Structures are given as structure tokens and as C-alpha cells.
Length: 314
Ligand code: DGY
Image (tube, rainbow, N blue to C red; front, side, top):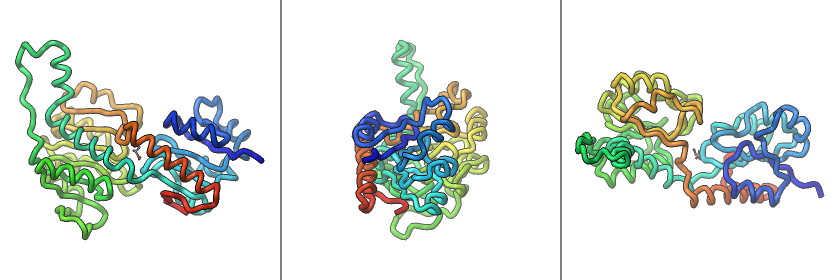
């Protein structure tokens, strides 16, 4: 019997790679001299694509794979998949919701704490033997600060719950008011930013939410405000953010995601009011294993003609 061909769009998890290699004919779509040549040669045997937040299945790739049946994402975010094209062609799509919610929410709170309390800078101060100088600057209290959340889905709710434990009043913006939350709703991001101290981006990246953080929002947040982004880099107009931080028009930022990952604007490296992490919201051993098992489960279900475990498009 012909082995099922699965294309992994970029390196994502050694465990997942090993398991896919064991079960299928695995094609790795990186370090290939020419993607065009590669596809010409292999496309006829590829029936599944495994993607993530870095690489997925755009219209060009989908069109190049005549036998593609499923795109199984090793991420909750689907911004690297052309869902319209998948729908049109009857290609199934799955993602990895729920298992990463706690980790991403934990990191959001971690970024709030490290940014306001300058934990990274304190660590550097001690390591570089400066403690005896005794001149470490006072930091900003986190408990009790107003937290504004953009996107009140699973991750937004988990951040809200954690913020409440720090006595932070929570408010939010989302496309529509959620009848089942007790948090204060603002009908626009600018109004939310004007009424909070810490603004967190936790919504999916779509055409509507691209650059949802722009100059107007940054100015509304102001010189005492802090921006936390655990969503996607393109949610933020990055040059505007960098200028605001450099000019002191924004108080600080905790950023896990960037517009052109893994490129990070160099000007950020010189700022002490900024904490930078390499898109690791879901990056714990436990969660990445759980995400990999869901991807494997979805592929297994698909090739047995069963319902997907976590379907986005069936
Ligand atoms: C997701 O699942 O979308 C995360 O950003 C990946 O870490």
C-alpha cells in the first residue's frame, strides 16, 4: 500500500516530527534548495500539511498540492492557513485549542509582572555585581492595576481570571459584548486603552485585527500604560510602538510576538521598559506534547474517516 505523505511546513516539535516520521511518509519543507522543485517532485503524494504559527498552508501551497485533504495545525491560531481556500476545496482543518490556554495566560501575567516590576533588569543588576551600589530604581506596583483585554475568548478569559487574583479590575473589548462575563465592556479599543493601565492583546489575527494597536491606541494608553502582546506580531503597528517606547509616549511593553519573527526591531534591545520573549506562549514541555498528540490524533481520525478531535473545518 502507498505510504501516506505528510508535509511538515517548518520545524516545530522533535517529538511530533519523530511520531509523524514513524507513521507516515514525512516530507520536511525546510532546508530544501528549491521549494518549487520540491513540490513538483513530491506534491502528488502529499495528503496532509502540518503547520503552526510560523508556516502553514497559504493559497499557493494549497494550489500546489492536488491531493491535499487536511491541514492539521500545531497551534490554536489559524492565521497561516487560507481557510477560504480550504473551504472551497473541501480540505479539512484542525488546530490545538484548550491545551495551551493556561500556559499562554500564565505568560501574559508573567510579562505584566516582569515589565512592571523590572524583574529581568533586577536579575541583570544582581548578576553583574551591582547590588552593592544599592541604587536599583523602584518599580511599579502590579496588584490593583486595571487590565484591559482585547479578545475575550478562552485565553482572554483565563487572563482575566488570573488578573482578578491580583485584585486587578478587568475590562475588555471584543467584536461583540459577551453576555456571560461580569467584566466591563468597551465598544472600541481606543476607549478600552483610555481606561486601563495594562492593555493585553489576546484575539486571533484576522484582516480586521491587523494593526489593531496603532498610534491612536498607543496614545490613549499613554506614558504610564503598558502593552502586552501574546497574540500575533501583526496585531501591532511595530514602528509606531517602537517610536512610542523610545519617545516615552508609552510606559512599557511585554512582547512575546513580533511582526517579522524571528526579526525583532533592534531599537527595543536598548530599552529597559521592555521585556521580550521568543513566541513561547505555549512553550512548555507538557503543553507542546499535548499539542503534538492532538495533531497526531486529528491525522489518525482523518485517515480512518472519523470526525476530527478538534475540527475547524470538517
Ligand atoms: C498558537 O497556538 O497559536 C501559539 O501562538 C503557538 O505557540
